[in-house]
Length: 170
Ligand code: S3P
Image 1 (spheres, rainbow, N blue to C red):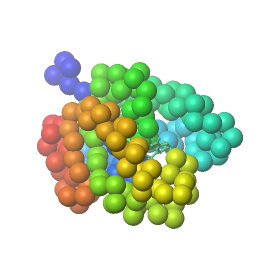
Image 2 (cartoon, helix red, strand yellow):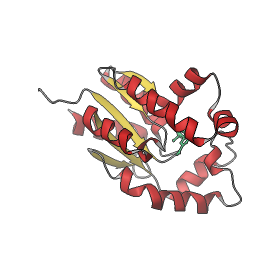
Image 3 (cartoon, rainbow, N blue to C red):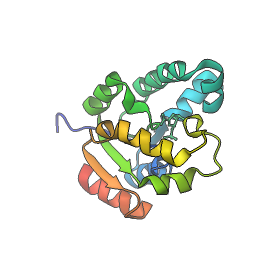
């Protein structure tokens, strides 16, 4: 029991289902839910898109790291992270030390479908979002693979995903 990890952290690319699975998982396991994107927005008093456009990605990444540290002070929480949380080595280290890390995945086409018409994700604002998604996935895949449990949200419903995650966690 000594090294049992009490928090569950969800990692994964944008639109792989973290915001759907997170609340459901928290409810099913009687855990609090913390969303690091929301912590950053509350801390900075700005929406993510505004933070990126006025202060740049680096400022966002600093605030995101701070939000992760704060979230990991919790005990018994589901921590839903932004898709780029795993880019910084210090975040990956914190996550693997202090949480049971669950990596959600989805096919690029599914992600593209889910983000179509959504302008809250500055990194996907471009001529060819599907190509950008494929490129970013290729760059980041190695980090999304650093986890305790991996599940595809293409293959299962949110309900089934939660069941499988909890079986692996308990
Ligand atoms: C980002 C993912 C976003 C948000 C920001 C940057 C990324 O979170 O943190 O736009 O670098 O992948 P979601 O994964 O919740 O969309």
